Image 1: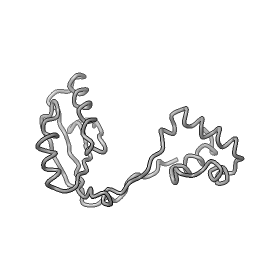
Image 2 (image 1 turned 30 degrees about the horizontal axis):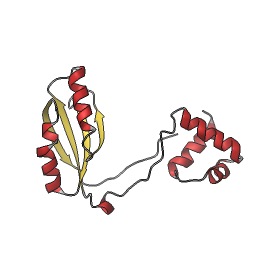
Image 3 (image 1 turned 30 degrees about the vertical axis):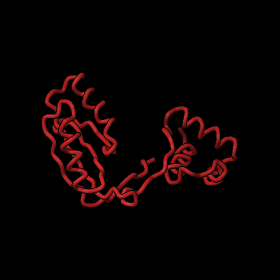
Image 4 (image 1 turned 180 degrees about the vertical axis):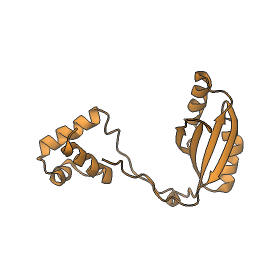
Length: 150
């Protein structure tokens, strides 16, 4: 990856809807070499995909919480069962496995507190191998979906 690839990535992180023509102009390439580079970045897995960035509040999703999960057991089978179960909970918009305790950090978004309470009681607390859940509420999103430093 060279400086031109980094310029391409920076532009696409800023605006994933750029046409190849616009992108080529911004990074100082002609159309064909720019297209080849973008395709190579996609095929190598550097560019994982493109998607629309949505506003949770515009969609009525006004409640955000961070849930820390500690598992009873840490063996491969228990971890795999827990992680597989997370995939079936659409309100979990991000999940990270951590070193030490707690074991996981889950970012959960729902309509409101009653919706979160129901999700917590009916779903989160029944996830496989959960020993303890600790929740903290998000007051304000300060930095979100920041571009990667190139």
